[in-house]
Length: 201
Image (cartoon, rainbow, N blue to C red; front, top):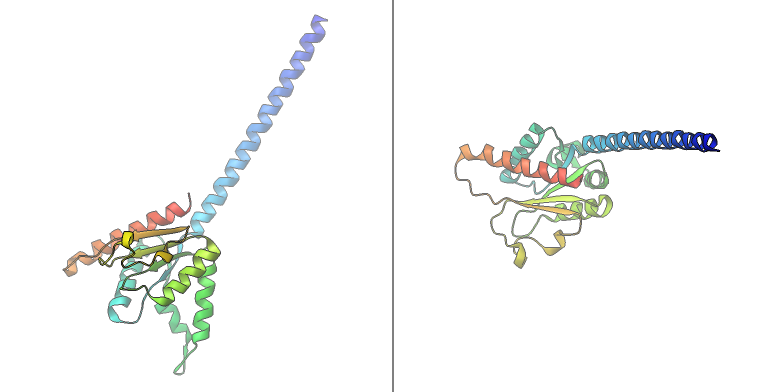
């Protein structure tokens, strides 16, 4: 009886070891799978759609400076003012083509929407694109450099630009010299990078 009990106990130990081993293997496989998915998502999040006003020299330069520093952080930037050139043919501007392409970019979960909401009132096209992105991907990053801002009193930023899933970056611009420009945009790009990292948590 004692021998039988010991044998039974030994078998139980073997079964337990097998169970523990199986659990460890399953845990390891799941961990590696999770890390693989996370790595892929981080890689996908390296693509940005940079929305904002693009109708004058100041706005276009602003977009180009920010694009430059986002690229230096490893991002691929889709810049609407450049993408629009594809839709100019023989003095004709295909506005429907532009609209369809913008909608495609903003609804793509592999692309992070980053929108500039400067000005007394945010650019209307950017607001529409933001609505598409936040509704269909569940996330969006908005930034504002305009110092005429008080979010607590809805000054400068409409309350509707704060839908759940939105990260808002306020980085007021006070530079007065040309040699301050690069450092300003470098820091702004880093803040956007940190916001994108937050999206992944």
